Every structure is written in C-alpha cells, then in structure tokens.
Length: 438
Image 1 (cartoon, rainbow, N blue to C red):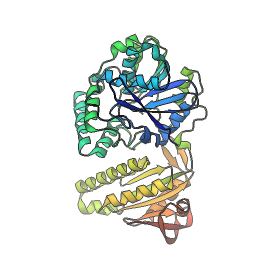
Image 2: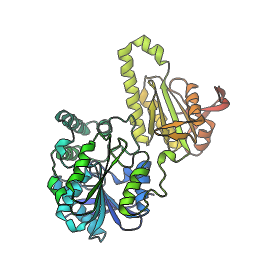
Image 3: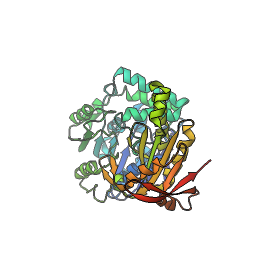
Image 4: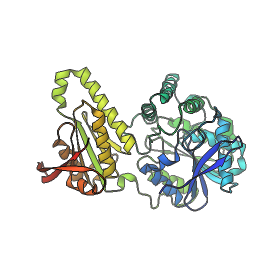
C-alpha cells in the first residue's frame, strides 16, 4: 500500500504534498524535475529503491510546487529560491530541525540552495547525477529541442513526456520502470518555467558554502546530466567524496540498484543493499512478444519508405501502451518487440490497448508467464522461447496466451477462447487460448 499523502503550507501559502514511510533517522528525498507521489510509487524499480531506504530511515518524499499532488497553480513562483522554500514546511510538519538529504538530478541545485538558506538543517548529503550550472547541461540546439518539446505538453501531454524521457535516457530503447508516465504530473506552464530555470540556474556559490559530509555519485555514461558535471559538483563541496559508477541511468533506482545502495549505505553507515532485490530478479514475470505479421512481404509491396513509417508507428504505439500499463521493454527485433510485466492483468490489458491502437497495422501478440533467466537487461530460457512461439501462432489482430497465463488471469474479467493444442518447436504440444476483446 502506498504511504498516505499529507500536506504542509509554505510561507508563500503553497500547499506541498508529502509522504512518510520507514523507520529510523529522517532522510528527505529531493527529486526535482517532474514528480507525482502516487504515480511514482506504482513503479516497481522506484518503490523497491525507496523501500530499501525505508528499512533504515524514516523517508520523506514530496512533490515540489506545481507538481504531482502539490498545489499546481503557483503563478510562476518557480524561481530556485521558491523551490528551496518548499522544503521548510516539510521539515516543520515532521518536527525536524535537521535531516539527511538525498538529492537526484534537478534536486541537487534545489538542495544546494536550501542548504544556503538553512545550513543548520543539513546533517549529511548525497547528490546523485546532480549538476551546478544549467547552461552546461546541453548544447543550445538541444536546449531548444527540449523546450520545444515541453511546449507540446499543452496539446499532446503523453507524447511530450515520451520525448522528454528519451532526452533523459537517449540510449535506452525502453520506457524504464524508473521513468514514469508523468503526463498527469505537471501542467505545461509550470513545466516550461522549470525547464527554463534548469538551463539558467547556477549554484556554484551555494555548493562552495555547503558544510556537511557529502557523497556525490554519478554514472559514467549518463546522458541527461553528463558525468563531468557530477565530478564538478564534488569538486565544489569542501567535504565531498566522489564515486563514479558504471552505467548510463540518470536515476539511481533504474534496473539493479544494488551497487548504488551499497555506496550510499557505506556513506551513511547502514547496510542499505541488505534485503534489496532488484525487480528484474523478482519472479515470476510475464513475457509479451508482439510482431508485425508478414512484414517482409509487406515491405516489398509498399516500399522501404512506407514500411519504415509503419515500423516507427508500431514502436511508438507499443512504447505508449507500455508506459500506460507499467510494462518494461526488453528489446526490439526489427518488426517485433519483447516486453515484460509484473502481472498478467497488466500484460493482457496492454495487449488489448495495443491492438486497439494499431488500427490497420497487422500485429499479433503472444503472452507467457514463468521464471525466466535474467542477465543484464535481457531475459532468457524456456519461458521466453515459449512466449515467442505462442506469438507465432497468432494471426493479425490476435492475442494468444499460454494456459498458465489463462489460469493466472482467473477472476480478472478477461474472456479466453480455446484454439486447441498447438505444436511449439522444441517444446511440444501445448493448449493455447485467444483473448476475446472488443
């Protein structure tokens, strides 16, 4: 169950939403960017990371002004000082004079400014993938592209969020479970102001004045906030330790957070990684394959240019459906996609959404469930190969599932039609079912 949401009022009378979970000394998480307390908690990677923190700390999360469940109408009061101001009532509401702070990405500059405004409130600090000067985040061309995308939030919020997620993790093909469907997390005007601020802020002086034990962590191949910017943050803080990590994720909870939790735990003097199990290691899981039927002959018939357009539409629709249903992209196979879900309800619901959205694109989908072998960002084993072969048994517009999926979906409101036993290469004869949907 998600922690209950509470509210505190800033001195300029903005209502700030926050939650509290866990036990131990206080740790306040400062996210920045776009946030939504309820939406974020639904994502397994994020929740597992926060639960790991909560085993040793009383964790306080909040939505900054203009975001999520906090007050949205802030009349452009989104200067850096305003964002730092949001932290004061959060501490006061919890009876705190002092706390440890974890700040990720945009949260870094916000916490740096808060530390200048209230230095006695800072016990220890962890900056993860943070930066000090906004103009160093991206080239002028990239900044213009991002700001243009932000403006799309007014008319096409989900498409805009998808593109912004791509800017955050351009080398990832999937909507990572740490990257949220935040189309409901922020209004366009506030987002425009926040992104404008992110590219112009400068907390160099604030970091030079920070007087607290500080850990700075950064992934070497991070794209949204380049690695060198994290090293610079560490060089500015007088009592900072800098630790470089392998990987490219902007958020510390993406995929397997064991290493980053270990680093943070060593700094804080507690075994944060103890008891943590990455989502990709949590089984069973549900594997979904989808592919365009007879794509080779279709390509020959309509030509490469039109075929490429169809393929792009196929992948865009798949990505949007995965975002909406909490799916995790595993890999693309040209005219097909392999994905996973934590439940059969999410997988089948996503499959139905996809088929409705595909329209004239002839796509078949196959779903299986079990305990695949997880290695790096991929899944292997009989569960996966069975899902692929189940998919191959379908025709355009069909969703085919294995018997284990049908049984796990009992009582979930789905209707299945038996299509008989089918011989799957290397597996044998197995009963398969078609999802009936309108």
